[in-house]
Image (cartoon, rainbow, N blue to C red):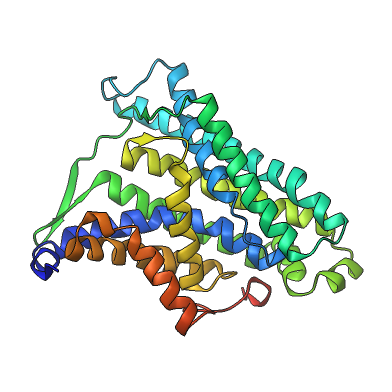
Length: 316
């Protein structure tokens, strides 16, 4: 144990953890939305995120960009960011809808037991991951330098870069937009109604199948945004990139209160910071191991999470 590393680098570890936690939080929204409505842990959500990481790279490749390209101008950066986000959002959204349509909807129609959904979720996750591995020959793929991390401002001895600030602000903005949509729109009321009591919602004219499809789509959209931020921050992706980050996102959802949108944001940010603190004390090899330890502790002492409120009881 080396607490001096944590003390000396407390500021940088905190900022880095917040940026990492913002990505985890966006990822975790997909888990918490689906669980809030279906009481289902959608393990295939990690591959929904994964295909988003590749979609933006494919589109950037159409512009002739690869990891060896020169950094674009400000105008080019904005253009590439926009098209990358659109591509990742579409790819992740469609993948999420496909998973719901092919893997889960037939089980719902047959009133399958919860264990069947769990096994199907794991199977869908493995299938998509291995399919991606075959298509990419299991090679790591580099990310073009769309945004170069540059110091933006300094707080004490802690430097905040433009990329870190972009990731954190974008996560907060998307979280706010999703929260307002769920709590303030007509479609959002339908989601909350199905989450609270699907039978009563159906009697009131809410189409359950459309609501579930919308929930998967929203989770996919958030995962697509997280995928682009992940690419820009990490600089590489590969066929199993969604696995460990998926565990982190699931832990964040449980930490904040799975089924709670604001809990996913809180859990993601806290987890990102705690992971970096653990890395500062025990070494970087313990960064992801800290997620598993924290998950066990949460389930033992507070299984409902920090906020614990279900999606069906959300308030405007």
